Length: 111
Length: 115
Image (cartoon, rainbow over all chains, first blue to last red; front, side):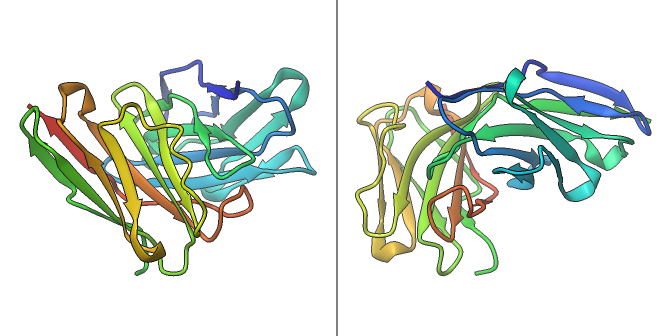
């Protein structure tokens, strides 16, 4: 069955520090992978997506993610976190109309 | 419209009552999705519509939940005889068509509280 696991429910980093949010997926075919961000009271916004090709994808707001097939992972990274990055982050997988989302990781940024 | 619009933004209802949640997708988007976001549970797929095809209802948790999409545009999610476990944020999204090439645009959600 398709599934997405985000092992970290909550992460706190200092402003300016680097960030990595983990995502592991289970999917029987070539996955289409996504990262979304949800700020308080807002809808989800697409950060980046991977379909094929270069396994390192760049997204908006300075985020990037790397697809590693051997590890079934699609971790999100940012070299230097800003206070405005505090939000909830969701990883998702799916080739068809409906996406399967992970449980989300809440990011807190310390000044 | 410019984005996906959901109404109401907040709804408090008594246990046992029926509720209707509305979603106005982006004009021209043929695919429409409903998800439920419960505290600490991530996003749970409920149902999706694609054009004139039969909707994929595989995520609806019980027969108390139903949804329709009229004229290929507005969608209404109906929950009958609400229970406390139905309390959640209900998110709607639309896309130009179904498929990973087409990004979802999400609405801000309806927060449902069943008391």
